[in-house]
Image (cartoon, rainbow, N blue to C red; front, side):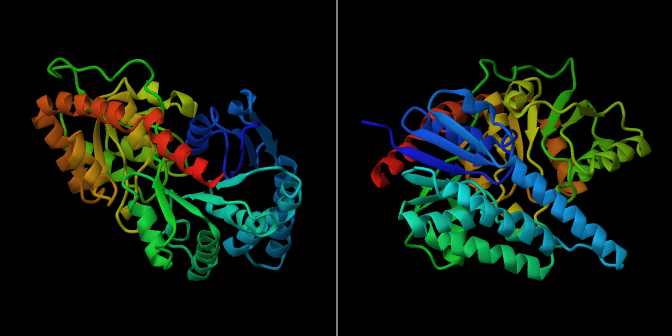
Length: 394
């Protein structure tokens, strides 16, 4: 008897997507897996029972179309709006890539990106196969200054896709999933939890008395605006016996480095080279307190979980996290970190000072992060409900 086949639609970047890696690991022992993405290859697809189909040529063609339109509009004194980009890279990409999907054999569709909901809806219409959708972000509200027409466009994709999905997969207490289902009047959908958790690398962040060295605060992830990264840097001006490390890349990186130089903080704030996502957890073990950063001014951040939260948990670090709806009960349950209300200079300074003045708590938080990993937030535990639910549908 052949294993059932799960078709995973991933319209994002496959190689740096912790969600895709986690879902593949959770399902590969029980199902055959076919992944359709935008890149040429995917490392995990080398394992038996996993097939990867890359639409990289189509992506290059659409990028060329996008650039031609941009130059033509520039000649007429106009800019290519984000809505046009959405139509090209979401609607047109989904329409053209669907013809390839039409000939694939599968038993269930797992959709990992809001943008991929269009094709999951079409597949359900033609083949009557169940669809599961993993909610990680409220895509339409993730940018503060997004044009209201663009929000409406993406919200429409989100609403229609959720309407056709059979299984909604939330993470960390299902708070985000419950919010969206209520928002769209879809409370009758089945909602399960699957938190993206990496494996512990075999070592933990070391326990220490922190008297002979600074406490090491650590952020890894995208270096973008509206996360409060600049405020954490400014907060370090009045913090002694501590160091702040950033690892990542993004369009805010140069501004952050300039801010460090302007405030003469080169001896306190350091920038590390990016590493492969598979190495993030082992690298985190070198630090004491892992940061999840967010300004609480958009819906996404109010429901923020952060892949890094659970990468740091798997590394056994103490945590500093925003007061988002999912993370407050997580910290309350495991007592493994500090919660700030918003990533302002004052709040980040308060968080850093609390850690420095209560260094004995850092070891307690580290031990409790280990417990959180061992008891609940590890790949084996998270995979159980996912596999069990899929069995019931196929």
